[in-house]
Length: 409
Image 1 (cartoon, rainbow, N blue to C red):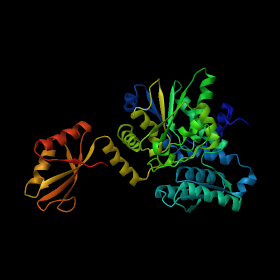
Image 2: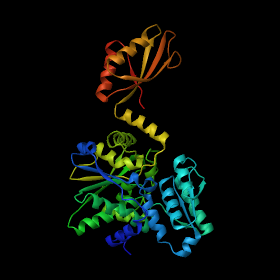
Image 3: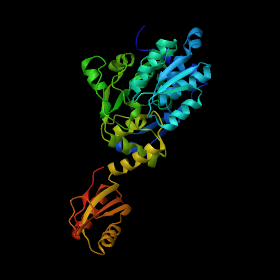
Image 4: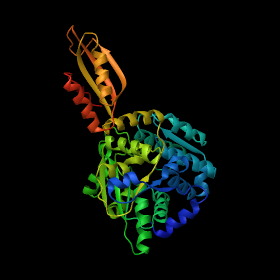
């Protein structure tokens, strides 16, 4: 059997999922399109059931199990989205489900997974550890291991999203989306390219990885899945050290380009999506927009960016928004040495107000930083309108003899 599923397989899968998944909205984004220089449509899979595309692959994979396999139950490992997809699919099909999740999993994802009826086992520090424990559980109990991306049925299920994209934007030229293990981009690439070829058209597929977890470029160079050492990234949904063997074979044939983005790029994209599109997207779901906003993608025509998930912990969202403001030059932290005499704090406040900036937080201390007895340090967090306004605010302080030191995030 060919690794690349046929258009008929994707269409059959879409029909089988029709009563389970939602056909998510596709909305134009003028703000992102203006940056790209071409029309951009956001495919809002963040509004899918369970909050991400994962329900597609999980449901289709479980639906293909034999009655005997279903009776043994299923087991999976995930930090959130795959867990919720498997749990809901198992509940709908009446299959017992056990999900291994790492200890640091966000509370909303943990509660949602339990809410769908799965038995959750919290153990291990990383998803890799959880996956190993799930595999051991499968060997010990006979439960069917549902891999998050490295299975042909999962790829077919995820690929139904590609059919929706082509239906929503039939003149699409380019589709941009994140890559973790590769199941989503492999399925979407195979489905949408097959549908376009049937109509005598071609569609460009661009994958985006977090630069701290970019295993696909070295894998493509080596011609096989390569394991890398990852670094922390806010895009935990695509924090994968090695692409899956099944999706990688498809990626090598059908994905036209892979780019990487920084955490600053991702934070800025989340902020733009919040402010301009009025949507909440998790970091892994925002990487396509991040690639566009950071200039990593060259416009060739109508473009679709897949917002693959919206499951973000509120506390993380708060930190990401603050980071996004700083990365956009709209949040400035400065440390100002001052002589320890009355009126200095008031004068600094006046100058910042005159510059049109707004003080969010202030700390005034006589201790540390190598201070002399006659010196103090004033540390301010200031809201500005952007990089130029930040520089104007700093210049306003400097013209009055102050020496503000910008504190990097």
